[in-house]
Amino acid sequence: MKLHKESKGTIAVATIIFTIISAVSIYYLEMFSLLIIVPLLVIYCLVFWFFRVPNREILDHVESVIAPVDGKVVMIKEVEESEFLKEKAIQVSIFMSPLNVHICRFPVSGKVIYKKYHPGKYLVAWHEKSSTENERTTMAVESLTNHKVVFRQIAGYVARRIVFYCNEGDSAKAGHEFGFIKFGSRMDVFLPLDTEIICKIGDKTKGGIDVIAKMKN
Image 1 (cartoon, rainbow, N blue to C red):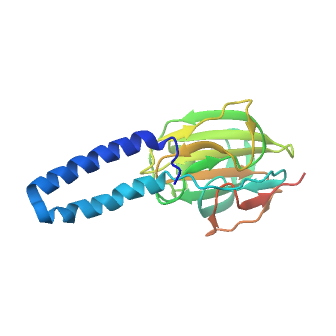
Image 2 (tube, rainbow, N blue to C red; image 1 turned 135 degrees about the vertical axis):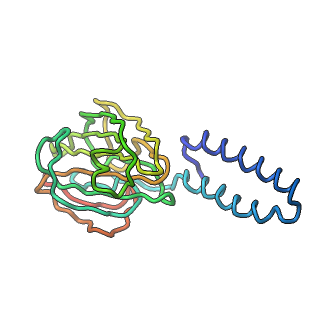
Image 3 (cartoon, rainbow, N blue to C red; image 1 turned 90 degrees about the horizontal axis):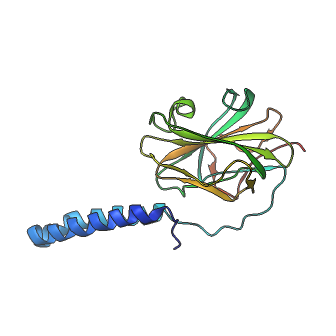
């Protein structure tokens, strides 16, 4: 199993903690140490599972809006996107549990025209106000269909580290990685009002693969 580059520090710390606690448990508890080691081993394995990098074939897309993350669609509604678009848009929000792959991918192809990091609160990621009050990074891409698409990485109650690799002026390719969020969190995508939304609330998405909407060329 291939692991994401963001895993190095976390796995190193988890390994040290697991080794120390296991050694102390064996020394003091002997045969009863398994009561501690087994649950700890499960958690240790879940850390590796969280940072997995799935092997996915990413296709080229022009009009399609691709799911930027693995997760569950929790919101589809018309909102006022006040940070960059400053107009009404359709917001599609996808929630990621700690068991989902947490690689963040471009939803559309084009050019990165905006990026800004915002420190903030750590409300639970499914809270509606987390989109504007939590720690977050907002990005915008001028798509190949000449639309401005905004998407936002949002930290949650558990997720407190947002990583992003793109800069203004960079090329964006739908489905390809631009960042990572450690542990549970959310991704919002803001689309033009005339966009055809294909997904629905409750749908499970596979980042880089599933088409969640189509924009008019």
